[in-house]
Length: 337
Image: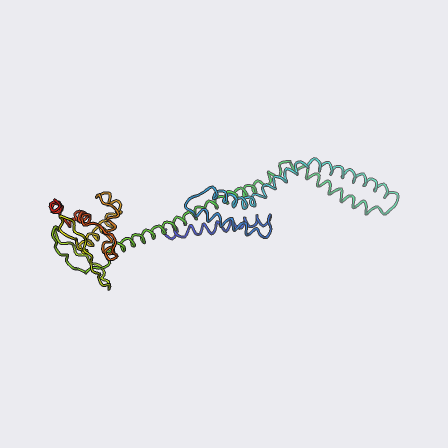
């Protein structure tokens, strides 16, 4: 079943285009000459491109109608021309009967003249024989014309007309199949492209949020105001020499600057929390009363210190630590008082 769902749209697309292009090329070649193949193929390519786009426009419908009109007319042409021919024959039938009757009367008069001349002298046998043949031919044609009713063309060709109508309906269905196939394939393409793009974006986000350097499996030290040891953070070590950390300015009445390792551990917990709960940084910030920019500064704390750029304040870092249980809220509030 999986193979059918995977390859059936391709088979319908290729088969439908092939049949439509056969009749389309025949139609355009009849009216524009050798360049008809380019007219037909370019119209087909334009229709395929427009139908592959996510949104269907009026231009797509117009191009498809023009594309389908050529093969449709080519198939129904015998039906149209047959009706016109039958109408012309019905209109000219009385005139043709009158002409045949007049021709028969003329041949009969000539035959009587030839018979009378042959009684007086010889040499008329050949004329008499040719006139009899012509007279027999005219009588046969007149009998056939009189025996044929006016609606004989319609009665005799209804089977062929039914087949032509079936071909025309099938042609429209083939066009619907081609449209359905190209829409199915284009949706698969956009879906896979979107999924891969989201995966790359998530990977880049995690890579930017991960700390650039840390010590593997190293227990975090206890510092004043912290209720428990920071969970161990294990990351890939790099060969870069850690730069000398710049001390964060102490806030009056607080316990002192927060070590960079602690900030990075809090940032890692933030990234893990966002990933496990399927949240965005904006959603987390709105829920806990943070500024989204402050969260970004905390996640890039070490890099900002290295480049001597602005980073998050200690009070913001401690507030985020309280969310993950790193700092005790009562101790921080008491110290601030």
